[in-house]
Image (tube, rainbow, N blue to C red; front, top):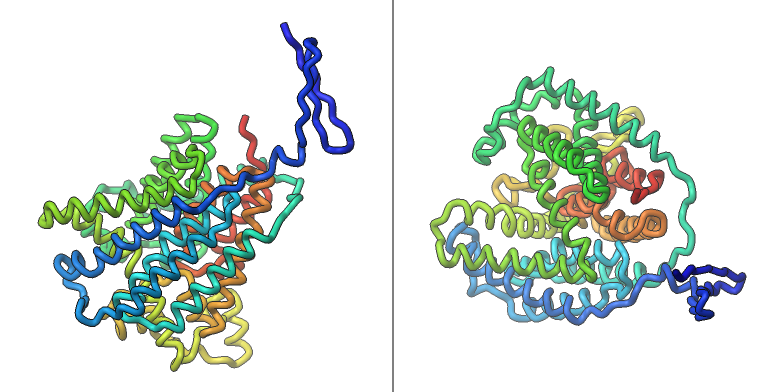
Length: 455
């Protein structure tokens, strides 16, 4: 039987010796160095995906969803610009296989490509589109050039698990006392908003925060840990807890997040995860468009297409341009609605939107009531005007830095699956939440203080 000896020397060379007197010299400085990959396939996937979204916007939504789409008003110059910008953005994706690259790919497919379609086909503002596109490309370059050699070497994993356990007990006991046994009404999506109106959490803001932590941090992270450690009973248990919250609250994101996590965990096994994600976006969109073209009267397929392409992709993209136009001529929110708002009131400042949420006001002006899902760029503009787009850029760079710290400490796979719901949430809320007591901030704190042990 051969036995292997490992010798380490100060020069950073690892030598392996056998009784057969064979030697292998490995540079340990290269062992943990992320592999470089190309973007050629990614660019092809992106262009095909954009073509599908353009097709969906022009044909299907005009036919089946009665959206205001005038094909005669399409600006050919803007269409060309949108494709050129998309090409540059995907070629600029960092060619290093780490979690920031995967995050950038998700943001491109989920946010930036839909914005390009809306810009071109809805004839939106060129200055705003080129500005945010340029800043996103700058963010990609920062991600490639900022290197981190060391990460934090301390951990409070046991304490974090204990805190998770306590919050879980509080949330589910309190929810049961408030709402009783859940019904299955939430599975009928037509009843969703009625269930939300009956939500008893509105009067208790502290429980509200705990429930959000449970929905977007504790349950998803527990699902990820159970899956990675092959704890099947625990996996089923936390999926069940997540579904319970969906039945009580009526928030679609709580339910669909389970499927999204399962998908991202499956894709994390792929050698090139970023290309796998791009392929998923392309195939899923293609199949939906194909099915609705074959059977346009199928209510289920139309509902899925409407929730995914219209609600998740196009509505946030449209609202970004609406927010830009609105806050050119109207006062911004500033720090109202944040934890410092009471201090502003005490100092004598006046909230410019005291009676109606600004998002609702903008929604009624531009879309007749659809005002949610503002997301990246728009939410920051609401707070700081045009300066908000530069704030978004700085937040993205900060988020990138924190992901790289976690990559060193916990690995790429664990980092990206834990932050997946946070990244998807960037098209719904504000990235500024990472500096508050939001679920985004707590997910980053979790990665900073938790150490993933594969055993």
